[in-house]
Amino acid sequence: MKIQAAVTREKGKIAIETVELAEPKAGEVLVKMIASGICHTDTVVIEQYLPVVFPVVAGHEGVGVVEKVGPGVQSLAPGDRVVLTYPSCGVCSNCQNAHPYSCDDNFNMLFGGKYRDGTTRMTTEDGKEISTMFMQSSFATYTVANQDNTIKVDVDTEDLKKLCSLGCGVQTGAGAVLNRMKPNPGSSIAVFGCGAVGLAAIMAAKASGCTTIIAVHGSKGREEALEFGATHTINGRNEDAAAKILELTGGKGVNYALESSGQPPMAVTMLRSMAKEGLAVTVSVTAGAEVPIALEPLIMNPSVTFAGCVEGHSNPKVFIPQLVKLYKEGMLPVDKMNKYYDFADIETAFKENHTGGVLKPILIF
Image (cartoon, rainbow, N blue to C red; front, side):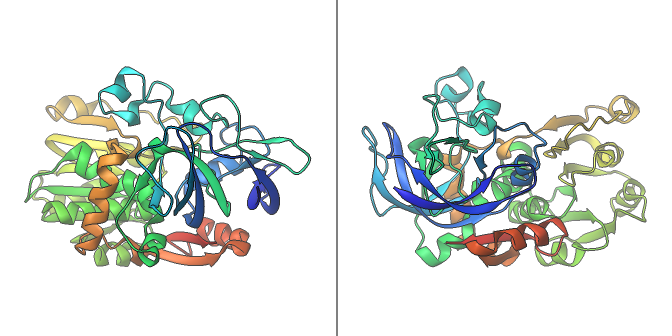
């Protein structure tokens, strides 16, 4: 079938074109897209920080309605409203143990450009294969996804378009708190970087009962952090964030910290901010970045743990419905981060996202 998709044929360029979309194969579904979020990882692909083969259709925070199911699909049916998320192989030991975020084939699944059978589902009008992203390529009016990364949710269509970021950004930030840290009520946490991921972490920290929630950010974004649940803010550009955190916590440091700023030196600052037995987590991906880790905070501060976290340490089939429940209860107001754009205005949405003028751009189809 012919669809409209935002195709990248060369570094940094994106244009809406007519492309051909194949029928869903075994275990796959055809989804009519309603909306898609724009995430930093889309820029990573479009700007070739990761060498995805061009042409490619990016997008990995899609929501829509199932229109058709392929052979063998039993968990989904036409008419189901769904959130598209990250794929996993389903057969490695980590996937079998309900840890799909640690899938042995994780990188290839996300950025290899092919579906599980080694082919693509989109082609140009002259028959050239178009690489996929996250096996969903949600910057399109229709797409084909695997049933395993297509999550049915119980919301109406109006709410569905507000929840695009549950597929990646919110899942990453909220999941780092709810699944990786699992803070007890009364805990303290610092969040370095208050974009959509960091703000989702702040919402999750508040929902978990953390009583000291410190947001570290630059000149913009701290007011939003307070709105979403932060109890204190620090200007990370002109204040010594670690010293300020120690001051705010009576010299103890925080029990938990998340680095989502994309600024590698912040990882070192985070480690200087930790309490004994603290857990420091990073979710940032910065191309080519190397950070000298100061060992003193890890050795002199007993049992501090420094960990990475991919896709919120989550099993999407379980976690995304939990996030929807929190949204319905008013504990995860992710819709307040959104700014909506017509699909035709995708270039404007990317520009405003890059300049920091918007927290979470959402494309409407």
